[in-house]
Length: 309
Image 1 (cartoon, helix red, strand yellow):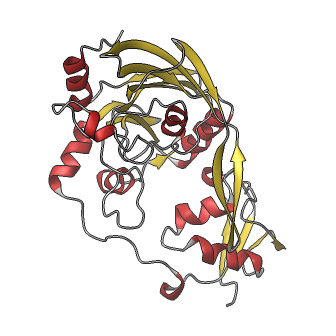
Image 2 (cartoon, rainbow, N blue to C red; image 1 turned 30 degrees about the vertical axis):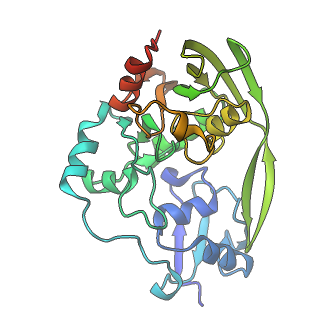
C-alpha cells in the first residue's frame, strides 16, 4: 500500500495518542489493523516509524495508506437510533454550555458502541449534534448518573489533561448487599488491565484506590455508601466492593451468586450504582454537576428505609 494519505495535525488533535487519532477520524478501522500498519512502517509520523502510544503534536505530518473497506470492521449499525431512545437521551441532559454537555445517563445504555451494541450514548449524540461531542470518560452500561462530553476536540484534550492531573472529582452512591468493615475506609488494591501490544495482549496490574463512607444501613444486610475514586479503573468500584464482601446490589458480574435469592422480592434486579456528582475546573470556570438517582435506586432506598444524607 502506498502512502497516499498525508495529513498535517491541527490543534484540535494535539496531544492525543496515535491510535486515538485513528479511532476518532477512522472509527471503522480495526485497532489490530492500525497496529499492523504502524509495525510495518506503513503509518509514519514525520517520516519516521512511530508506535501506537506516540502522542501527536500540532504541525506533525502523518502519512498512511488509503483506508479501504477490506481492512475496516463493519459498523454495528447504520440505522438512526429509535426516536424514543433519542428523546430519552435528550431529556437526560442536565447541563450544557459552550464547552461541555452533561447528562444523567440512564442505566442500561452503553456509553460507547462495540460488539452487539447497536445504540450508545456516543452514537446518539452524533445523531443529535452537527459536530459529534467527544467522550472524555466512561461509566458502565448498567451504571446511571453524571457523564460529561466535550463540545469539541480542543475541549476534550483540555478535559483529558484535567482528568490526568487527578482534578476530576467523582462521587458515587451505591446500595450494597452486605456491610463494610468500617464506617469509613479505603480499598487500595490493584486491578488487572489488559493491554493490546501489536497483535498480543498482556496483563498489567494498575493501582486503584476507592474511598467509601457508610451513609445508612438496613436489615443487617444492606448499606448505602458514598464513594470517591481518585483512580478510574474499569469496574473499579464493583471489583473493590466485591473484594470486601459488600457487592453492589444487582451486580450480576461481581455480586454474590446467592444475592438474587436473598433479596427482598420488591427490589429491582438492576444495578444500584449511581454517578452522583462530578466536580472540576476548566478554563477558569468551576463545574459541579449533580444527578438525581434513577427511580429503581430511589425505590430501593424507600423500601429499605435508607436515607441519602
